[in-house]
Length: 261
Image (cartoon, rainbow, N blue to C red; front, side, top):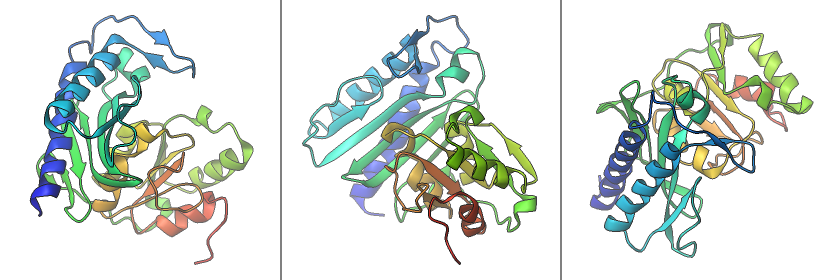
């Protein structure tokens, strides 16, 4: 492992855990929930966790760009940038449900150099960098080896996100084929895929701060991460994440341009 890669992977992991610990100060408490312009909720926990994560990166990588859900883009011209989602799953967070996480990614352009996701309420952290593997609480993580859809667990954040029939209908067709279908959503679903506890996770709408950290986590665990057009990108605006054995079978149902093989 190069010193540079090791440093970025370690930094992504540490700042994700640090920001998650900040958010935990308000977890389980009654907090005021505001509604942003896009209809999504935000709390003091979201803002303070991202604020402190940005300060952590500023102190160590002062020339890098900063891009997150809650605050303005800093140094957008920088070659390298850090992307933050302080609480992915705020709706769960404010209800005391532990299936939320803090996401941090380090990128150059559209290449994700390191990504980390910390789930403090369930005491799990998963992180990865290209070529360096996926690490789950300090041990190597890998996707499952399930090869049949009839044995698979498929996840989605919320069926209500599938508002367009050309997305909704393929999803329901896929869901009818699998063994288990659940809305264990937001970033928690990707944790389950990366650690072999589920096989498929689908999201219809994803912002960069939702998806950037998750791409290396899935791919370095041996899975497949693409948008709904089959592109291997963290910035396609939507995501299909699977284990490798079910990658083609899943995408035959979901891709806007179906695959033949």
